[in-house]
Image (cartoon, rainbow over all chains, first blue to last red; front, side, top):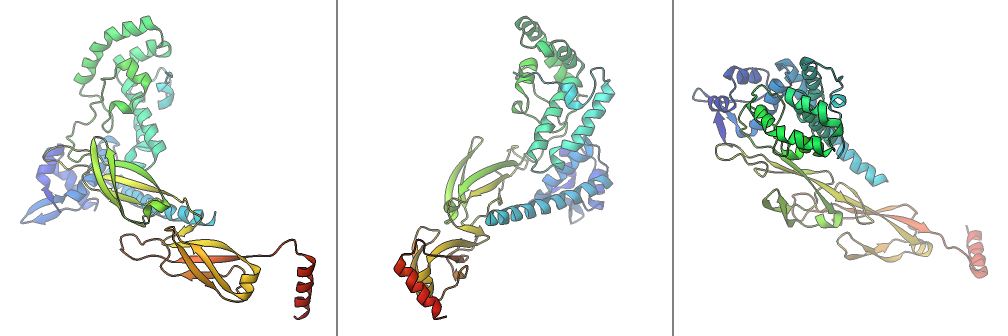
Length: 93
Length: 301
């Protein structure tokens, strides 16, 4: 699993480090600390980009991001359950 | 080519101010943005529409042109006139750093109406932030149930890339698999997007599937059910299996054939079970002799 230093990510996206810190505080992304340098895993980048779009483009604040994040997880679970139930309905039809 | 009412799409009047347009667009974007509507194709379509409406109405030059020519866009002379002006606004558009729209869009995301009025080369320069991870691609693949009995290699063409892919046996209908790095490529230093393939498995057999198990209803004649015997049943892989029928087999009884179900996903050489349900068929159009024999039988009970 590859990781990228937070500083580099910030420079790349042209965002402030405080934005990343805030997301971390709200448990919206995971960061890794190695020898006092903070890194973000490659696997977290998609989530970070999603949060960035929601925050900067849709103007959703951090509390809102937290709520949206939880609801999206619920939607994901429900969609999985729906697929299972649909397959079961096919069985009875 | 159909005329598109961009005002209607944003739910605003023809006299809407710049800030009213912005407000209406943001409100709709929050509702239909793909990030808050995962897997919702209808929302994605709507989002493209409102983006297109915003591209036109939030740019004063574009809006002027649309208001003037939009409805009668088919007329050739006006078409020509507007075409001549086109170069100007493209410059204007690209030079306008304040232009705001969400996500990155390709020409395919715009309607014919839009492309013909504002040119095919027109492209939203949406994000000022550099993209680090490429977009994820989502594809759907339809297979028959009999196609997933064995792990099979398939070559898919996504965009300009060829992907050799092993589809594991026993994959479920609606299941999605992720192929890392096969989404949008962003070049050196970035992370490629991923490719998600959703499988639509069409049941082309008489078997019913419940997870790894298969179910089959089978007609059984009355005499075999009562006296017992042997029947030949088909299995999902096209083979045939001999099955002993016990004497006095009851109607609707289920018989389990171990290991004759679907292959278990990512567990080699492991299979679900096959359940056979017997439907006992009563003889019809009895002859006089048969009736007499049944009467005799009934008297014995």
